[in-house]
Amino acid sequence: MRYMLMICDDESDSRGPLELVRAPEHVAWIDYLDRRGITFLDGARLRRSTDATTVRSRNGETLVSDGPFAETKEQVGGFALIECDHLDDAVEAAARHPFAAHGVVEVRPVWDE
Amino acid sequence: MSGTADQAVAAAFRESWGQIVATLIGATGDWDLAEESAQDAFTAALDAWSRHGVPDRPGAWLTSVARNRATDVLRRRALGVAKLREVAMAERDRDAEPAEPADVDEVAASGVPDDRLRLIFTCCHPALPLDAQVALTLRTLAGLSTAEIARAFLVPEPTMAQRLVRAKRKIRNAGIPYRVPPARLLPQRIKAVLGVLYLLFNEGYSATSGAELVRHELTAEAIRLARLLVTLMPEDCEAAGLLALMLMHDARQDARLNELGDLVTLEDQDRSRWDFGKITEAVAILKNAMQRARPGPYQIQAAIAACHATASDAADTDWGQIAALYERLADLLPSPVVELNRAVAVAMAGSPAAGLAIVDSLVQSRSLPDYRLLPAVRADLLRRLHRLDEAAVCYREALSLASTDSEQRFLLRRLRETTTPGPPGYT
Figure (cartoon, rainbow over the protein chains, first blue to last red):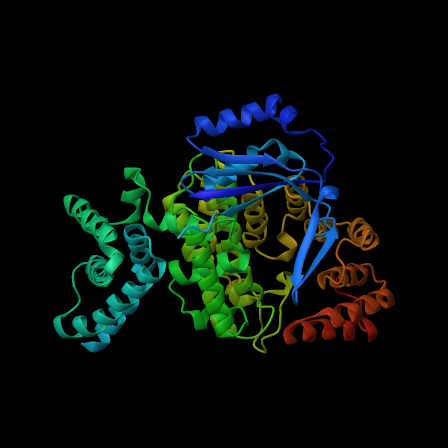
């Protein structure tokens, strides 16, 4: 099954993608996925939520506003798309993601039909 | 004849329902199909057993009928081809070995995980909401109907049906595995299973409101499932601790209410009405678990219950030991409710003033807002200290929070005792 790990934190970690992929804890995480036979399909680091734009279309009108969709303490800061056998493996992968130690990771199964 | 058959089907239902459902989920991966096929098999048994007699091994008979039903349904489904092959293969594997294990001990000894264990761990998966874990466990393992579960938890039947549908859908969509978790995940996951069983038991035991009969069923099911867990995982001390704890509470069930249905405190209970068979069994289970020196919250709570259950009367109770056990429990599982219990034990061990000091610090910290037992305990300690006016105030507060009629009658009686002058001879 494919799972999307949405990596959220309070945006206190300001490191960009290049810095993150070289960080030893992230290298260790990718190694862990490899060892466990979990495939890393895709992933990205997102810009801060202050750079977000929210868009709605209502009655033919486009409403554009600044900022993220929800004003919460934790914001999505990146994602990882993985493939593994079942939820328990996805949860273990999420638990070992470096950001899980200070933020939260939401695990969502991809809707496959 | 048909009476015997009905009884045999009822007995087989209690004995084998969970096993059959668990086996069929394992073979087909389809929870609804597993339940429906099991249901069909029991319906078929009602007719067949009254006409041809009860088979030698009812469980094996039912399993094979249910399996055939499931195979038929899958055969009729166009997309069922691959699954059909699996069922057929599972059947072949099963034919190679004894068709139905004689008893669960044999399975445990063989090292092959029992299907029911896979079922328990899947029902109690932390990715499911707690109320769904409880409902799913009762439906699939204990065989309670949706209507019965709805009654027990005081929700409308459609709500409970919806809850079960959602839970099964999540198991499928989120890819929750049907398995006993590997050793590295086991400690956390067992904790979740034990938590669900204890919640089940307490829901039935403390009966926060009406529908008494179904609620007794909940305590019985919780004990039955705990027994099963202990048989399947004999090395887990906390599972044994939980079983001992529930048995000891259950042994006092009949003495907890008087003929009017009012609550009788432990102190005033007629101990001859306790079930000493259950107490003896519980003490043996606990002793066996504690010998392995892997203590945990359930074992400690069982040890506390054992102090009560083995005392010949309230005065004979080793309250000092109980207070010490609550202190250990508070180390493992810090909680204001544990503190409140420790306060009672300290008071009973001879220092009501020290007990009251613990209660007062709980009141000050506001860690138990609107908890009905906090003013009730405070009232009782003040009564023991002969501070009757203050006690009356607390009894009134406790009364405003009491949720059952019998609890209210109990508190009213105490309130009357503190407000009418009488012989202060008792403590």
